[in-house]
Image (tube, helix red, strand yellow):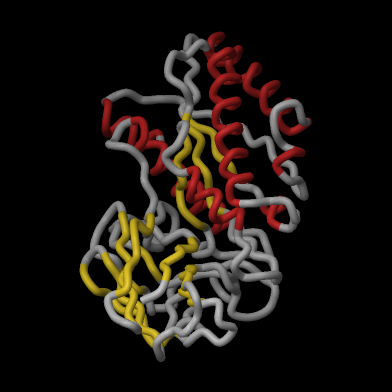
Length: 318
């Protein structure tokens, strides 16, 4: 962050990061008024005093949300619930920051899409869908997924994973404040090209779109045909995905084994584990779709691509 800001502006900044984390909590246990939020504000008050004592101007550019796993198992959670939670989070965070720092421009809220996918109905993914819906609204920026980063157990990334994710956050923060705005990969639309072919168009930071079958970051076991996509036509016997291929620089073509017979179809991506109960790049709900961003991790030179977040699209009948 320091290096890139200095290169862009000629000014050396001092950075300070506050981590106010509390595990095993749904959003309701982390929002304004809860202990983790209060701890964050107390730390922010101390940081502002420290900055001013050293003659520095305190400015908070962004907050980062790495959570919502606790909401995934809640029966009443919907995609709209999570979307509203992220809007409330961003609004209240920006307001509490501005009161303390006096800055005129609100901080943005960088949201990392949770990778946790309970073993229940694969089409019930409100946490992932809500994060995608909230992207671009009310100062919220979806940084992307983290299924591609290394994991240490069933649900948590290891040190390498958190380090790489931190770099993802920094790049989004830089793009929002010094570039042309932060954006993650997003599915723009999908349509039937024939009775067995679906075209999905993407908005992405860097084209062309890529189906990464190298296995270097995301294990391809169980994904060789589907690339992480899931198809359903509500018939109870939906045709399988036979192949996924790059159609144009900005689109992919999904070919089904046969024409669907159900009433209406839906297409999901990175919503189903290939085995077991673990998240992450080996057996978790994941996919092989990324863009062509040519960056690398600062510490181990691993390519730092933008990977496609999980999503669900209703696409009707062919």
